[in-house]
Length: 371
Picture (tube, rainbow, N blue to C red):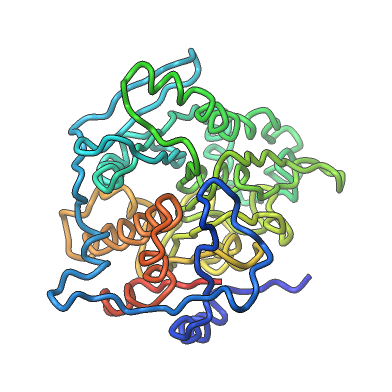
């Protein structure tokens, strides 16, 4: 199979998105699934939305929303090995659900600024704390060895010639399993906290190693063993769609060119050239767009940032320089737009994130692609 490159035809796709050829949300009944057999008649016109007062969709989505957010999260531990941080809007009754899987070496509290932003736009954000000790200790202690490489499958040897350096499959299963259990305990979370969480069409999000888990939950597969039939496949249809921040592409962690063949859910990939995280070693910036470029078309989005780092999405340095502030604003705008478009069935916002509004508003720092 010939690999389709997202960046290889970036300029061509961006031009095509100014034409009326992208598909609208196709559901009149929010409880049903997006049909996969839309005809060419089921299309909508991309519009540049501006009310003439400078209050553009980008400025709204990148700024704090109308519903506010608490200063601190709720800590909820429904099971001995499941600990979650919960952010919620303070001026909104019912709110839709976002489940987030954090990156390696970080924790849910690392993303406080991002989660408060999402909450202020009307979402409940639930972020489980992952224990990656076994995976991180093996990868960290061996990644600088010259013989280190990503094997063809998850449980393969990580150091050539040293078959004792590997990671058993059970440790790779922990994150996706935790993300499945989060959905199971939402009724209990509502009962304990009194939050009114809308549980239909929940979205999943993840950053770096969390993006790997989110992809698996959405339907991507990874080669888990040496046999062709050894696949890690843990798709959970309860999740309606998702967004992944600086994800992995083929060639690492058992991901192959065909890993995204069955990922049909709405998806946004947020990435750029600057991520050098531990779990992206060996991937080029183009590789990190694989989930967008290689999954079945329709309802797929790529937010390509001209500049980005591993910490861009945490907002950690957003107050230090204009550059970091811009990066965080771009991530807030793109991700919030996706959540409102698909979580809230907002067709106007869908038009925006599939068009060129963001590119114009950011002087080209953020390019949005749709397929």
